[in-house]
Length: 217
Image (cartoon, rainbow, N blue to C red; front, side):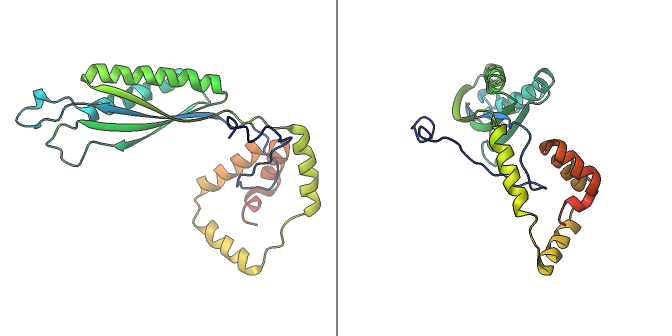
């Protein structure tokens, strides 16, 4: 949308995200890059002639192992997520000729995410070399880290306070109680942590003063 000029005449943009509290976020979001790594090997009968096969699934497995070792050597706030989107079929007696894994890389700033992305690509190349397979990288998307406008946030915060708290019906409160009953202590503790982390000073105050009451009334 930016490349197509859809924001060229925009002075300000407002975004919204569900949370455990009502208020303005106090954090920048993580930049992210998503790409798919496809490996092409050679199929073979796994019992009769495994030496003729080149396993694409082995390449995916080695890549994921390498990426997991990489976690220690990137900035603490960074994240590596992956999902095997093609495991090569359902027959264990066939060497898998095709396999693919989708990676989502997050970091506080886009240059950091780009640097990690390049290292993940090198890991994928290493996995292809080790398995004698062919690697194809398909770039999917990238998002820069969200940079908030504190002046506009302060104005919005004042107007939010003028609206006050919602007036929930007894039926809504009963439904909320049912939802809360499904949550563990860890779920609630994590929700309080998120409120404190994203709500700044106000979030910390709410978490300390209201405790569990901060969530679901």
